View 1 (spheres, rainbow, N blue to C red):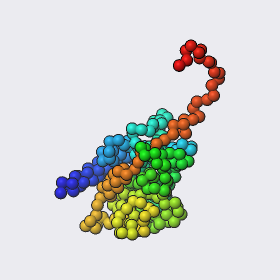
View 2: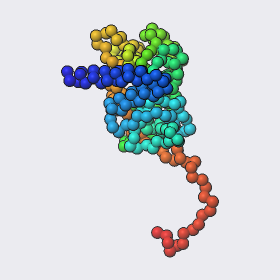
View 3: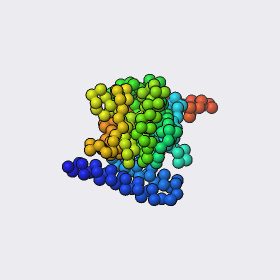
Length: 270
């Protein structure tokens, strides 16, 4: 019972703060406020070893994502590159990304959010097959779900369930690589989107899906989508490994050939 009350309180707090942010008259300030609110609550509900920020994701081959609203990354191993106030996160450090939009009430907005997530998922996290998992030393495998990046869409206002279903099917039809698909869609005031396995269980693994489900807020078993998102995110963080990175692959071009070489006298060597 206590857990149920904690979950209900968490969801209520998120919605109450979002309601307050909506009272801000300036659209840009309103947007920043709601993004900060959702980032704050996500940060409060995941392990402390992860950071929650915004910026671009890069890989060692020169790939770069579109700008991402919420980047969840490991704080204790990989460097974060910052130019001015813009942050660039090594793809090896990133465990999850989210598009956080006030409204996804048109086909164009939904496609943009899906494409932004795919722009991260499509980066080369393996560094041409050279990256390994620590401490095992096992090679990273792009096809393994735990080795991928979790992708979610978060919003406060969606297309109708009928339109959302139609547009998602159309998108999936054109994107055959399931590793690029989102893992969950959460309208914090309405429905969620997750996949369904052969065993009729709700899952977030696209390649194991035989169907997908859009939740019904009128169903007695309805769980608030924000809580579903936090549950699935934490479930993923339990199994996603620490990915090593090769500093020479990112920084190899920063040191040029020496202008001249000066020998150290023999008596000073050793």
